[in-house]
Length: 346
Image (cartoon, rainbow, N blue to C red):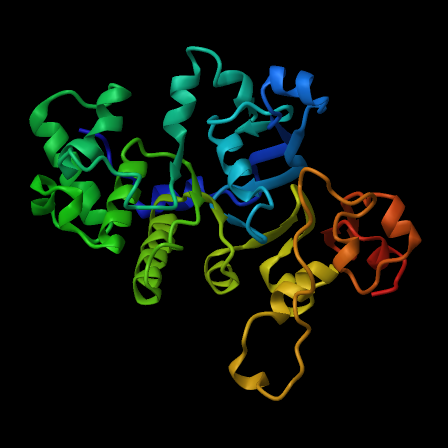
């Protein structure tokens, strides 16, 4: 039977000074063109969608980086790049000093996949409705050859269910017998089966009621403390991000526009887009204060604006913003891509 990680061992593993995950210039382009014959007959060019366009960040051991942004900004594509579900068009992900994207293509990649797991957004779609909970959670243990004896598998599944606040008696049930929050706990138990070090969480609470969201988030925080887990947490809910993250990256049209510690970003946002996102949150104590609404719509990613992608919606945009794309630079301890901040106009 697998050894259970003790809190003391977890604390030793959670060496927050060492980056466990490093994304280096990650990019993913999808060909969304019409079929070849249609393009020839209609005289249309190929169409390329730059879903992720040069994203770089680091996550230290035992810490949580949250990625936020409006729908379609590329958050989930980054998640799938990190776990090897997509092959990057450019750049790579380094995990514990190893080029993960190259390793995923080799037989050795199986060992790496044990250390990197993913929790998906929809607990109703991510569990096989025809399998019992015992089979769902035991699958990664069997697939990676960690346990083979039926008794040992049953004991380990019972441990995993208890670790997420469920009963070992639940292993004989089917997914339809559980609520949404309970199903997501089963998904977390499955992800933890191989004792991973890095969990990619793609909006794991967005399909749940608010009270259930809090329960699931608290379980994830407790597991992080006990086992020294490292999280990439993807969400569009800034209240959730404030609760779980250590660092926050703000994405817009496939690029990072701001990357800062949580306290800095929420207390003193620098990028105009980050400010708009935070201003859109209703606040109990600011009912009389005028808020800046989020202006306009996200541009068509197939035909993004020239220069800074945010310039059509930005109140501080000038000619430089419309012609020159800003690079992510460190300004006063914050990684930010904005000409207006760089020039002191914000």
